[in-house]
Amino acid sequence: MATLRQLEYLVTVVDTGSFTRAAELLHVTQPALSHQVRALETSLGGPLLERLPRTIRLTPLGRAVLPHARAALKDADRLRSAARRAAGLDGGELEVATVYSVSLGVLPPVLRAWRRRHPGVRIRLREFPHAERLQAAMAAGQADLAVGPTPQGWEGPVRDLGVEEFVVVLPADDPLATGASGAVALSALADRDWVHFATGNGLADLLDQACSKAGFQPKVAIRAEQTSAVPLLAAAGLGPALVPANIVPREFDGVALRLDPPLHRTLTAYTRTRPDPLTTAFAELLAQQACVLPRHLSARAARLPAPAEVSSEEPAS
Image 1 (cartoon, rainbow, N blue to C red):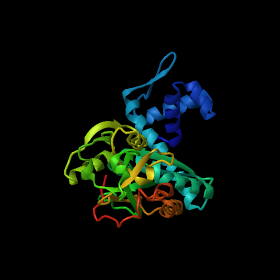
Image 2 (image 1 turned 90 degrees about the vertical axis):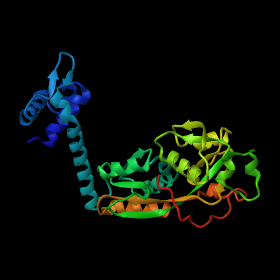
Image 3 (image 1 turned 60 degrees about the vertical axis):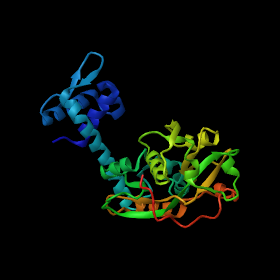
Image 4 (image 1 turned 30 degrees about the vertical axis):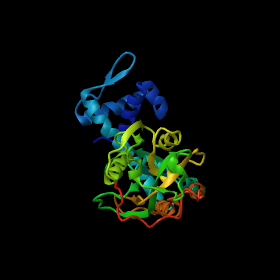
């Protein structure tokens, strides 16, 4: 039966490409390391590594085993962290998964507040371009907590965090930006070339769906790989953009207009099973700190009037 220590030895040898360097990192003698790797090979039924004069290479069996060895070590780390949290220790690591836009707009103030309250708890952040990939990663056990749009058909605990509003970003000199209402209908932008998101980004689907509902298909001026670049490119005049209000930066030369009718989506925190106390504490802080409309944006009273009621239809991407 393979042990975690043997799997750790295998992974370290592969990552360093050398038994000598691996032994130094693991603080064991090279003969002891070699013995444990041979014992692992015996238990698994064949050689895992080919010893070459200047390096090592994985055998076909080794290539098949390595991903499972890494996963087992990761699960063991997560188990130890969960045990520390369950014991009430202010330490360990909390793995949080989210989508790109949430990591830009919602999480930074939450993580800052969390760091002040729990300086001994490390946060490992995993980001995904689409809510479906986030949900799949969470189902596969890649994080303790997911933060994103409401998951479809999720059987574990789900906690609503609030509703975020989407705005249209235009350059400050755009004719629509000077309107008295401070709001714009998507149909008024049907003839524009849009600053779009990269294919595979959930916000690309959201924009296409919103425009389709308004009766048109958005023409693409440019697709941005980085979600954070989209409002900046729109402010620079490359075309309108549709973004969550909370990702519009403070230093910003453009104008953000509410939609008429408004467009919202609910954000949630969800887990596979009942969360432990530390994960619950993070979710509670999220619910308290998550901002739908940042103060610096809402201060533009001429552009953003008081928030409207939540729309009954919320995009899922």
